[in-house]
Image (cartoon, rainbow, N blue to C red; front, side, top):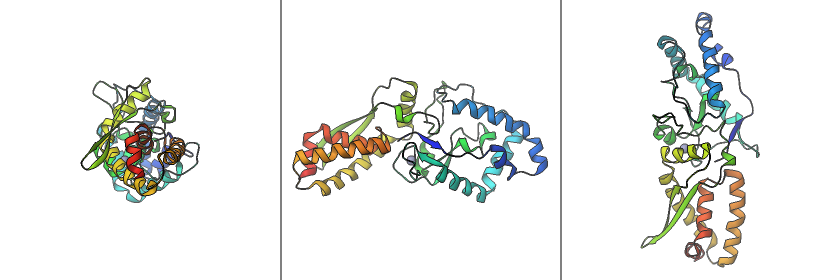
Length: 270
Ligand SMILES: [Zn+2]
């Protein structure tokens, strides 16, 4: 997973203007100003947020949420907008996979700050993250009760600067090899958010399942190769994958596991 960036951001007022009548726009001008203030706080990479609360009345909040829910056409155009605007930093490639897990396609839009808590951000582009339905369903709240952030914010967090935080353990039993994953102790704030994020979107089990498929694919690809040649191929793949998907992606973790376990390397070369 790497930091994503938006190459273009439509203004929040433009988005709302297409949704609300003139009188509603007047009523909610104040709310829009509050939304901007709120969004500035979380786009600065704040990792501790104990006072997340709405700046608008319940009645105003309902209009924002209703506009998001009722206007399907606009919401689907938001998805299109995000798909084209969100690119992997450095490569210019469009993101088609979910940044939360890095494994599935991104067909949902997640409200980074929950629309139940800050409804004025229900339509704010910077608060909408394209992700897969599974991560959207399981991720839970954005902040712990003590205010610590538990979900990565891919528009702002410098994921590309993180150290390698995924630890793998290779095991062999009668069914063959398996790899399990957990996180190492992180040094910085964003690293600690990564570790909580890893738990929140259940990356340990997602990575384990993906690793099982990857190992089968490697076994087909490496069959008959010497360990030495296979190691060279895996090293090259790892360099490319680290660069393309980040050092904490599932594929990188599996390739590192292969390099750390001669027994596993032997198994894929059989
Ligand atoms: Zn996902």
